[in-house]
Amino acid sequence: MTQGGRARLTLKIRAGAKKTAFAGRVGDVWKLQVTAPPVDGKANDGIIRFLAKLTGRPVSAVRIVTGFTSPIKTVEIEGVEARELNRAILESHGSDTHTGSAEAQ
Image 1 (cartoon, one colour):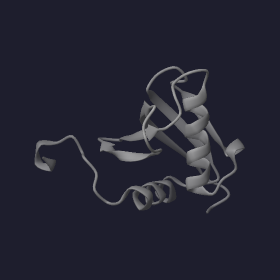
Image 2 (cartoon, helix red, strand yellow):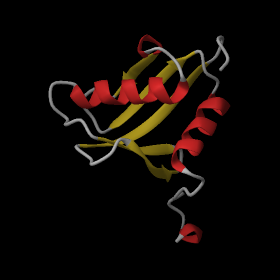
Image 3 (cartoon, rainbow, N blue to C red):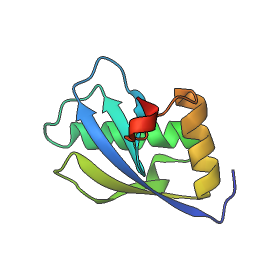
């Protein structure tokens, strides 16, 4: 992956899930289920580790910018372009996404 880029991603988190995985997208917000509970920053740590592994970046390259205690978070990843990040997410999730529009139902 590119070393010079920086991508931002808006996530809606569901902590305490059976499996850590993307669960679709509504508009520009990706839904991410995380196995870690929303206690003592465990879910945030799980998000960071998952995104680092997904993008092949070190954990230190992934940071939560906003939403530390909220289910809606903005995450920034150093060394990856937005296009590469979206491709990695789609490959991990499959191409089916829910846009929230009536046509998708």
